[in-house]
Image 1 (cartoon, helix red, strand yellow):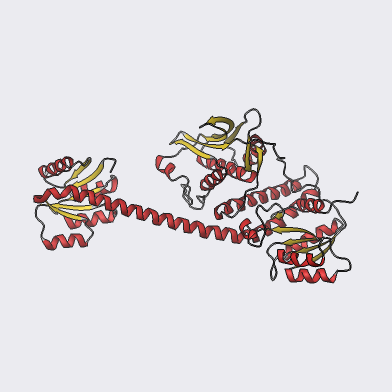
Image 2 (cartoon, one colour):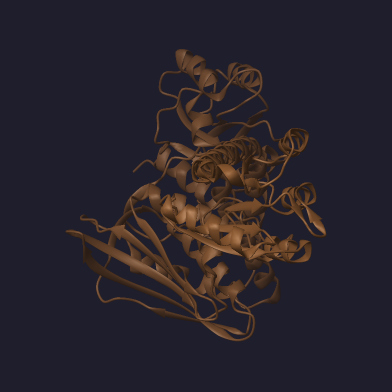
Length: 506
């Protein structure tokens, strides 16, 4: 071992204990030995001390080796236990090995002790490695199952969110600014945005989502997120944001950066138990010959111990009370930052607060627009005939009803086969656009479209999906999926895409 070996020695004879210590030292073992001579002292040292190895005499006044072995296996089952005795019969030796002793050494053959200690420590390290690998395999299997579940529920979950988002957009559009009802509608809209963000976070662990990366200004992302982050905080926590001068260009997925910000701010909030401040700072630095941009999230909360820091990014590890945390937040942050070729660092001490530092490669290029289409944006009118093929009847009926109110003529079908039949029934006046879910019953949306284009080569198509990217790709769609309208979407987003596909005649 590279560090000092911590040995607990149960021995009532100080001279024998000194002899054993000298022998180990002479054989090149750097040991710190704590000697105890009673069962009570032995148990206390086991429970409260850090022990690499136990040495125990077999016969002591008021305590025998078998009882000491039983206590050791109960309190520290993975710690090697060696019996070192002057008198131990063959039956007693066999009995001790059967009960879990690692080895036994007779005091008149003390030269065997150091090799036995080395072998015991090596075997214990091997067992720990195997156990660690087993735990890692279990975690990997858990993550794989988790990813499959996340991908499986995404479709239905996003269908429901689309219905809620579309209706909240309609409410917002029909209510005057400043009214109580519009405020309630905006809260629905905000909750939907958070729910959609949660879906993205879950899918990070399924490794089943392509990144929509673009050149963005990190300062702009933080500024746009500031009001949202402030709403996550209670009255006892202040948010202070310090933005660097000039743009800080990075090539990232905006949703990923926002997710990291949300997770770090929520963690910082939960670390503040009375009153405190969360500080967000952006800047740039040259490090290791590279130009980097960074943002920090710092709190003056309770801080972390060294043991907590060591496990901080483990999936499902949390120090929060049961029911208050999943243990996914920081693990998500690290995975997202790694996907951006960045680094995440943490500085923390108990009662001194915590600072997370996120470093990202600086980018070159033109910043894309950072303005998203709000749920309450204008819904664009039209008069064309459209076929909607969607298996969720609530979503299909709602979209059809709203498009008809906007002047469109709408046909409906619930699966790929029915979509072919409805299109054939209107061949004298066919739809000019088909809005089709990717994963339809009986016949997939892509296969249905392939057959429709045999009879109508110029047919316009808009695919929608609430599935994960890899699931969509399995239907034959190339990645990245720029042409697929992702659920959840608002009616404003839908009508904007329709008008992009069907431009108005000049």
